[in-house]
Amino acid sequence: MIKRIKRSFSSWIRKIFKKKAVRIGIYGPPNAGKTTLANRIVRDWSSDDVIGTVSEIPHETRRAIRKENVRINANGVAVTLDVVDMPGLATKIDFHDFMAFGMDEEEAKRRAKEGTEGVIEAIKWLDDIDGVLLIMDAAEDPFTQVNVVVVGNMEARELPMLIVANKIDLSDASPARIKSAFPQHPVVPISALEGINIDKLYESIADRFG
Image (cartoon, rainbow, N blue to C red; front, side, top):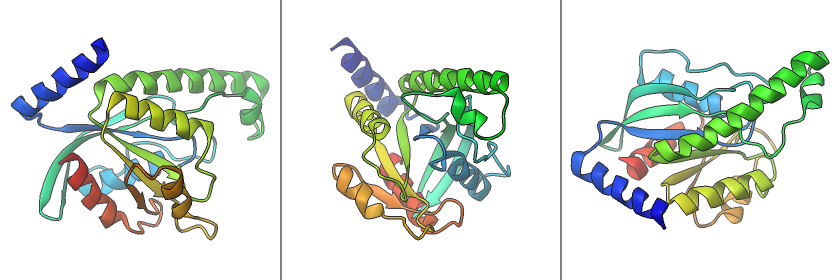
């Protein structure tokens, strides 16, 4: 009850004082394409090239990375964002997964520890953001424990959210599965890597968070 009152009060304050920028967290499981999308947003709407490093190794992003004052203008609606690329969310991080990429045991355990710390940091950031882009791999089963827990957490916090069905350039991608799994939320199918349907995402961001 107290947390809900605080959220309502914060929302009321934001409406009165019109925050300069809307702080948007990019969330999702490892390797869903969060950093690829963050990089594309930054390239398209700011003078910077990238915000983070993309890798096939899970949990490459181990700390939240923030790019301030990214101004998006779509469908005649302008919105200024603070884009925060979050570490990948997972219920369990096993060091053996890193050893599969050629790391020795010591390095793998260090990476697993950093990945776990990154998950904790991403969760803490939920108290300091205004909305969420939840990235899901459209070629994977969306009805996972991580996705269900994350969506439930966002709903409990009453955070505005867009689900981004990424990787539609893959032959086995099915955004319809994501829409079916989470029909209560808007879903925008894109390929962050290829830029497919990215203008539609910008329009949805402007409509949802502007």
